Image 1 (tube, rainbow, N blue to C red):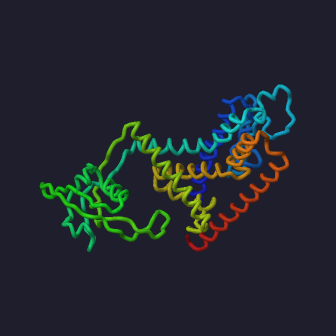
Image 2 (tube, rainbow, N blue to C red):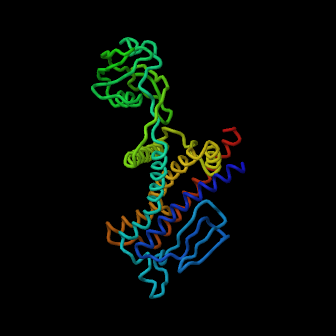
Image 3 (tube, rainbow, N blue to C red):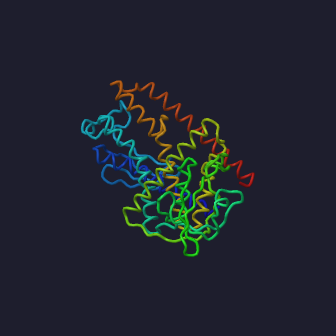
Length: 356
């Protein structure tokens, strides 16, 4: 438990720091003064003032905050502070400052993936057939274990992943495959068949397959900086889409909200990933960073997305949301977040008692 707690504090510390640093640096660049930069909430354990800003380490490590000059509409300001006031900046500047926190979380995830790809490269499965499924198109067409697949529909095959991608992106159309068997090149034509399977959420689906399994041999491919960055962008975009789809499926009931986890689950997973090695731990941080970025962009008052919604309404109507309505919406948003926190804590506790 102690190991998981340390890993949890490291993960949350990194994610919160990056998020709040995004707000902080954007505020400073766009001419807004910052009174407080805090990691954590509650009583301040350590604090140091540099220039105008007080930098703090607070007792509750479940978040953080940046307190900007004139952040609250209607706040009393000294005349010399008006030029540093958040409220007195343009909608564009205020939106950039608010959006910077979530986007710095995305930048962190991209950076982590880039570093992993740059130093580790790719490990791909060789396009060698290891096993043929019974009564499959591959068996009917004469494909045998040990065959090396060189081309599919005139596309050169570098890895087993290429085969899966081509078949998966097709609609069951016939495939012309060039194989190599004991030094001899063979041409085979076959049609994929629909087979039962499961998607990333465990839901039953049907997908086109030809009934072959990789032999399991892999090879390493080094990546240059541009390739590493490209792979990082593609993977993070994939995580964003998967996370958003998960939220939609929870809302419409396709998958259970009981899958949601809170701080206890994150601590357990952080400990497991840390024990598995620095690569797994870094991947886990990137994954959570994407989730944190997306959650903060939800249009819920209190969250960054809620503030962006207020600015969007102001931009469209030409009038700022009234302080009274803003206060009520923020209270509602806070209640929603508290309810969600209680729910995920409940899920965590149920998992613990059930041995999950």
